[in-house]
Amino acid sequence: MKIRTYLPLFAVLLLLSFVSVAFVNEPETPESTGKIIKENVHEVAGVVADGEEIYMTRCLSCHMANGEGVPGVFPPLTGSEYVTGDKGQVIRMILNGLTGEITVKDVTYSGMMPPWGGFLDDQQIADVLTYVRSSFGNEAEGVSAEEVAAVRAKVGDRKEAWTIEELNQEENQGIPGGD
Image (cartoon, rainbow, N blue to C red; front, top):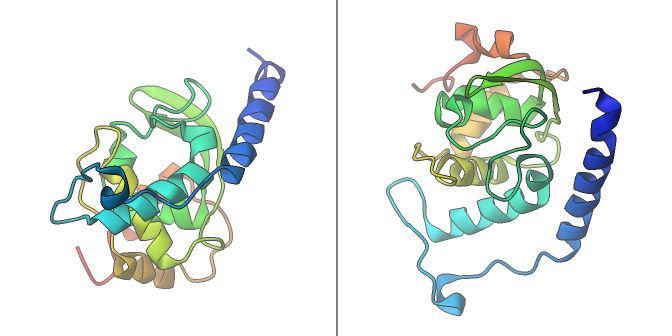
């Protein structure tokens, strides 16, 4: 299919993301809803709620509410080896964006993920990554603001988006000064 076939879909998704932002209320708390939010060593209720809110306003339009993405257009976060794998790699993706081809769950995607490092602070990036790494069936360790800060300091004033080939290089993995 040609890209023109997907343009109406992109327009609808973009419009929905703007509309969804207008209807975001204060995050619900376990006390106000009676719901129990899963807690473990890596997450607390506040981080999950903040991360979910950021996801719903920044990531939903491409990766969908269920984390499944749009087949052939936007990759899924559910069961993605990039989401649940190396923390340093996924932090770099959020900070500077991603461009070019990436294969997720045996499907190749080609596009551009926007950089969020100029819009989100270290705690917000940690919150959304902790949410994504522990939602949609994912069970990966959370991310701390200190880990994001260490990666941000390492990449410095890089302006261009990463390619997956760059991120697969050893020097672009892991948390500087950590594991």
